[in-house]
Image 1 (tube, rainbow, N blue to C red):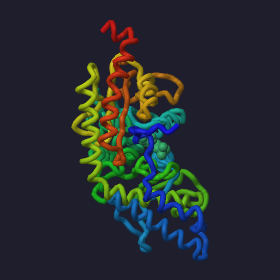
Image 2 (cartoon, rainbow, N blue to C red):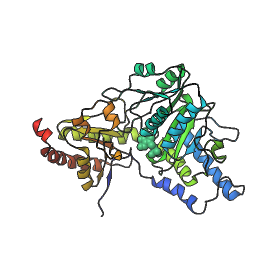
Image 3 (tube, helix red, strand yellow):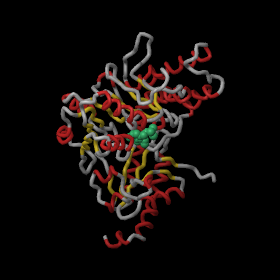
Image 4 (cartoon, rainbow, N blue to C red):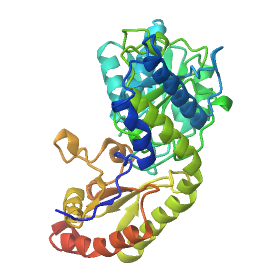
Length: 395
Ligand code: PLP
C-alpha cells in the first residue's frame, strides 16, 4: 500500500522532525549511560539533559536558573496527561484546607477526569461553561472561584476548536482568591508565543508529540516558589520532583523540538495559517450548509473545526481515508460511542451539525498542494453522503 498520506491531524500527534530524530539517535546507541552515574559516560548524558531543559525554558520564556545554571522550573514528565495530573493533585494535596477545584467544561480528559476523581474523593469541582463560539465568560468563571478553591485549571488552547483562552487574566483572577492557576498548554506551545517570565501562571503542561518530538515525553513547568508535591515518587531525578530514570533520548528530542519550534514560530502564524485559511475558504466556497466552530478572531493558526450538516463525521473520515487524507471527527469515538464530543456539546452545537464535525489540524510540514487536494476531494464525498441522508432530504 503506497498511498500518499495527507496528514491533517496534527492536534492528535505530529511527525517527528527529522532533525529531532537525528538528535535523539545517539542516546539509543553509543550514549546510553545513566545520567545519574558518577563516571563521565553517564555524566556527559546529564549535560545533554541540562541543555534540553534550557531549550525548553527558552521556548517558554522561563528564565530562572539555579546556581549551577539549571532551569529548574522545567520538570520532565512522560506526557501531557501526567503533567496535568501532577499539577492538579499537587495543588490540592498541598492545600488540604481548600476543598474546591475550578476548571472549564472544554478541558481535555487529562484534566476533566482528574476533576471527576476529585469529586469522588469529596471535593467540589466547578466547571465553567462556554458560549456557542466556545468562549468562556470571565464573570461566570469568577463566580465559581472562592476562598475554598485550591486551583483553577483552564487550557491555553483547545484541541478541537483551536480557541485561545485569556489565561493571564484567569491566573490573576485565581490569585485574587489565593488559588493557584494551572494551564494545559499542550496545544499552545510551539504554535503561539509564550513568555513565562512575564506571567502569573503558576504551572503549565506541555507534550512533546504535539510539537514534532516523539510520544512519551512531556514537561510540567512549575514556577519558582510554588510548592510542588511529586506525582511519581522514587529516585532523586528532577530534583526529587519526578522519580524514574530519565528518558534521555526523548528529553534531548524535546529540547531540539522546542528549539526548532521557537525558530519556526513565525511560519505557524504566516504559512500554516495561510494554508488553514485556504482550506476553510475552499470548503466554504464549494460546499453548502457548513459551519466553522470557533472563536474565529482568537484561535490557533493551524486548526479548522468544520461541521458538515446532516451527515456523520465518521463516514466522512472513512471516505477521506480512501484518499490517504487523515483528519479527526468531533465524536467521542474513543469511548466506543458516537456521541458528539464534550467540547461541541458544551458549545451547544446542534446534533445535526455536531455529528458531522471534522477537525483539520495542520503543521509546517503541510503544503498548498495537499490543501488543494482536500478541497478537490471533499465536495463529492459530502454530496454523496448527503444523498443518502434522510435529514438532508427533509431539510
Ligand atoms: N491536553 C490536550 C489539550 C491535548 O490535546 C492532549 C492530547 O491530545 C493532552 C492534554 C494529552 O497529552 P498526552 O497525549 O501527551 O498525554
